[in-house]
Image (cartoon, rainbow, N blue to C red; front, side, top):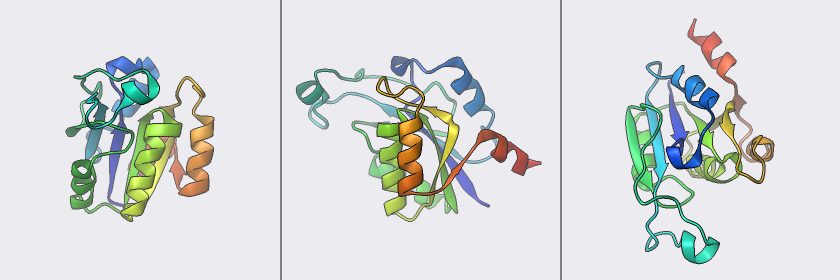
Length: 158
């Protein structure tokens, strides 16, 4: 099955755990990889005005993905989505930071394009509201159905 990995907002300002960096990196080189990085531009997404906080203006991915794209809100940009569509994948695996917000927003955007979003449940962490990510995983299963794990992905490579 042709697939790509979308890595959502695994960046220094969100303090990802070391295990997340290590385990996502195990998938590099086995499929096309795309990373998003959340950066602040109040003119595009008014985080400061609406929520009283903002991501940094400049940031980088902590994962050495094939491509990295900056976004200024919860969902991936059209540039990211068009890139994933051009890869002609059968499904897009999704992992990263804030399962119930940015990761879920990526799922909706991918679903709407017919790109079969599939959450890698053990390669995601939630927000401060739900660090385990359990809420986001339940929402993902309810809305999109497709999930997998790192072990399942590694088993299919052999």
